[in-house]
Image 1: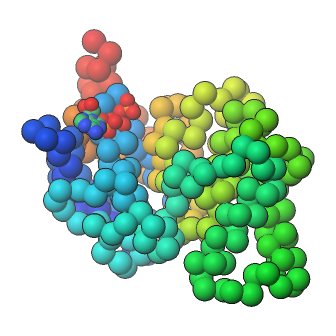
Image 2: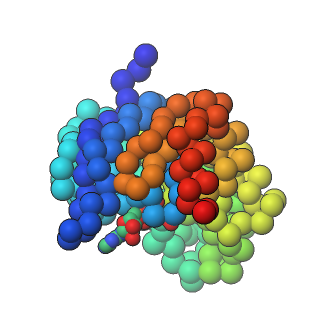
Image 3: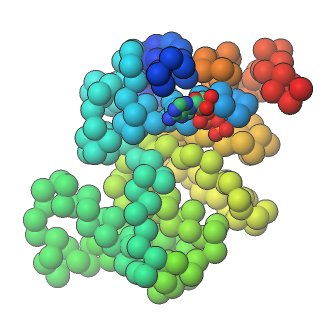
Length: 250
Ligand SMILES: Nc1ncnc2c1ncn2[C@@H]1O[C@H](COP(=O)(O)OP(=O)(O)OP(=O)(O)O)[C@@H](O)[C@H]1O
């Protein structure tokens, strides 16, 4: 059994007097899709923010790939191999798809201290990588399109592509299917499944049929706490999970 790439132990997040997260723990294994679900306000985004360094927790511990990152900056976490789709979304709408991706790939080379990326050979490597990413996320035919002119679905694909430019060990996707039409949902679902060949995927997603069909593990949250964690099959039949969802709709 491989060690988890992400290990979160009993973290808590408080906003003033409000305890938004209480003793949340999770272990994400390499090359798996681990989904985080729960009714609105359950604390999923707060948890993501704690994991990715947007808002570090008030208590508990977070380890990523063997490094304790509980209080580390978002930048340091990226350096260790954590990516978050919208965080690297600094998509420049006036640049083309290929130009945006080139910036993402170059940023990685730069942070690796590889100062020769301006050489013709390195430029060739970067161009090949950009092309490979566009192929993977399904926007190769949009290489020359101004990013601001992309459809919503293609823009989300570009966001994921930008995150892939960092060659992460884990990618955090916050509602990647939100606002997508049926075709884009299907394509993005296939893309997410393909990601786990190379990395772990931590996913917040409200589209339950997709979550149940692609996840290896599901953690269910309600009111800032973990209420269940299991395979999709078992989570689907868990009475506490049904109660949490029904309760939220009442
Ligand atoms: N900056 C903040 N200050 C105060 N309360 C906050 C803050 N951010 C979130 N909360 C509260 O923390 C709780 C958890 O919110 P969070 O956004 O993490 O839930 P969520 O599970 O992501 O919900 P959704 O599915 O609707 O996105 C909510 O009650 C929310 O109002």
